[in-house]
Amino acid sequence: MVFLQEVLGSHAGHANRLIDWPEVPQYEFLADEMWPEFAYGRNAVYPNGHHGNALLSKYPIVDYENLDVSLSDAEKRGALHCVLRLPQRDGEMHVVCVHFGLSEAHRRAQTRLLCDRLQSHVPDDTPLIVAGDFNDWRRETHATLAVDCGLKEAFAETTGELPRTFPARWPVLPLDRVYVKNAIVRGARVLSNRPWSHLSDHAPLAAELVL
Image (cartoon, rainbow, N blue to C red; front, side, top):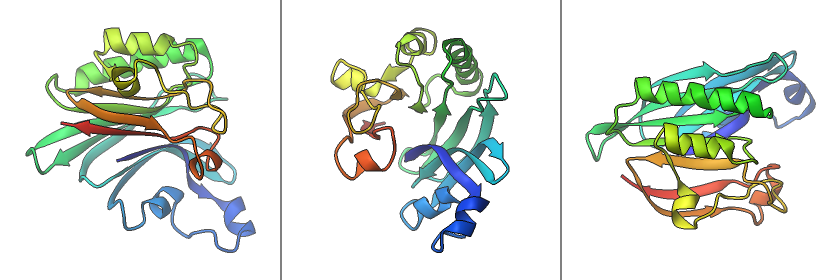
């Protein structure tokens, strides 16, 4: 699975300016032939197009809903909640791709909304992954997710520290996370070298889980 934030759904400006701009949405272009399933949740709309969160998956996505967790018109944020079918286990898995706000007060409220969603929509014994950009450099969201939601952070489980992902070329701040429940973390690493360090202002995270 791949969790993406601020991925383009459409952008007329890029399409008009760049000769090789793909005709399909950016998340579908990135999925290509490697990720047969994808879901997109539109968060921000502007004159040239829109962007949001996306999930690319090799497992079938049987249901999804994009939750608007925006707390101001100036900063549109979302949580894309997907349900996947796991053929090997003959069961389901829930995953949530999140992008939280820059304001501490907004992040606190968005964390509460996320916890409420998980408690009301995800069975206690179901595998769960919550990953994305939490913008939580003060680590307050991390504590709440652990205590109120029962989530474990993949890097904290394996290395004892939260992953530093921003800025990508010299990661200092732990803005991005991978949280799990009912899953074992086998390994986790920050992709801070080339080419990853030049593809975004955040360094990507990679985690291997066992269900």
